[in-house]
Image 1 (cartoon, rainbow, N blue to C red):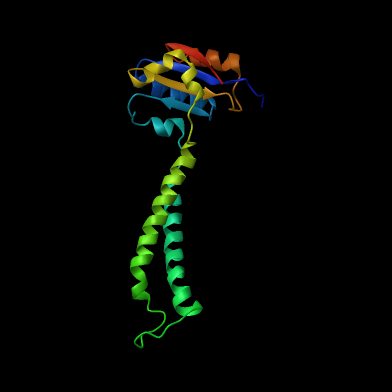
Image 2: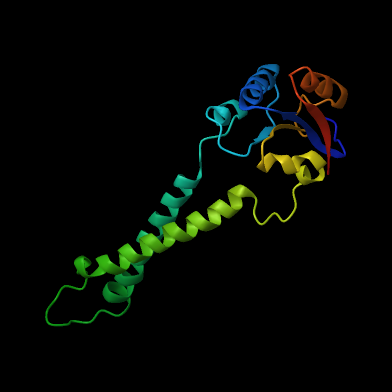
Length: 178
């Protein structure tokens, strides 16, 4: 796999039908490092582009579980093992009294893992992205649709990939500099 001094190639399309059809052809041709940019959600595009199973629910569950176990241990250890006190003849490990704090730490752990997991999965903070170097990309928030094949794709070849994208009814194919 050759390293390229560019981020990739970006094709511009006029409508969603052409974009989805082009994304299907790109996947059939064997490209896997692709991304699409649209001004609004396009039904069926995420499967075509190849978005993976979302990891954020799993990360959130792990955070909630960590908070739950941590909250319970945070109360159990000092009350039962570290410094047990006999208060009114109650048992040391009275778990119903541990429920409110355990619940709150479950929610806190899930929320924190969710926020920081989202930042990590989205690659944030990212104050700069190479696609903004393409002058026509500003139309992605108005009425144009873009499909980008990244240069780190094993099948990427500048000339062949550019010819392939030009044959997909693209309005324009641009090189995305790094």
